[in-house]
Image (cartoon, rainbow, N blue to C red; front, side):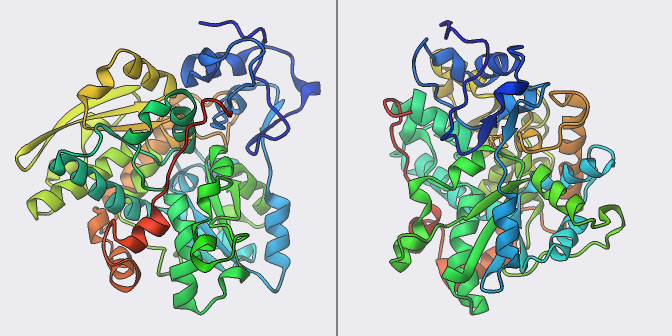
Length: 449
Ligand code: SF4
């Protein structure tokens, strides 16, 4: 492994996700260790080279001194909420609802979906929608793409998931030859923003230029993702180049600070439901927050698409793709076809499978950068022990699986708001309209990080 001649991860002023206070840094090296051994980025770097951050923020999660921080967007969001000319639409990612309550002294794994929505209403936002809705949509688009690649025999396999922007940037930077493996589907957040300023705006009679889209996410890399050039699909469609699909990302921690600053009694709030049109989700959409969740959701959908039947009982709690093991494998029978899948967290682990060629023995590969998936993204509460122990991660994971089990809708295909958006706006998965707003392209960053 190359020596980069540094004790800690360098953070440049133009990093859209992470910042560093050098005065607090003791050069302990925890950040560099995680970046090298878990994420694998530092392992690619050589001394003197510009450091290619993928923005996952696991260095922040490992920093015991508070020297590394996720960049804060709260001030800009507060201003938008106070501006009477703006309509602020907030969407919350699945993992936020199982992390937020920890910031208010509640046990890890407390499921606080309804109170989170009510807190956002109390903060004055105009609409509260659910990224888990767009997770269901991602499954339809990405799952249909997978079936097309599998059944036509023409597309590149294995298909890699594309919902983790740190993983996407890792491939663009260190394995551009693997870009064709990435699903062209945007992440749920990417889809949600594009649809709020088109479909939701149209249905609600809102001017897209008036809307400010805010996502609350567990993730620092999402702050980078929304700045990607390709995330201006609404502006391209409407001929307004300055219009972005997503305007701001707040982390779970930033939302908690906002609630605390406004003295909203989070623990005593009455639960509130999401707003409709883009606020309904299946259990499959919810488990996106966990390692293996995207895979399980995709398998439920693919099974129903291929067989015409509801997902088999086995796929409603599919153990081979669950748990904190870093690399998991399974073989699933879809009609006539045996499908081999892999579930990985930590880009360093994915790198090992790429290096030894094992990755090509699979048809579909889910990669999440953070340990256990988005439930331990850099924007989640850290507690007293840094980084958060696996026991905390498992409790958050357990909370999402329990919520999945109690949802009346378990498969993305059965979400009525998903059926409605295809009927009224998108037509069908991979339609021209869906390709325009819900799919994206990637580019080689090997020379330009
Ligand atoms: Fe963000 Fe989730 Fe990827 Fe972590 S695993 S970088 S939280 S998308």
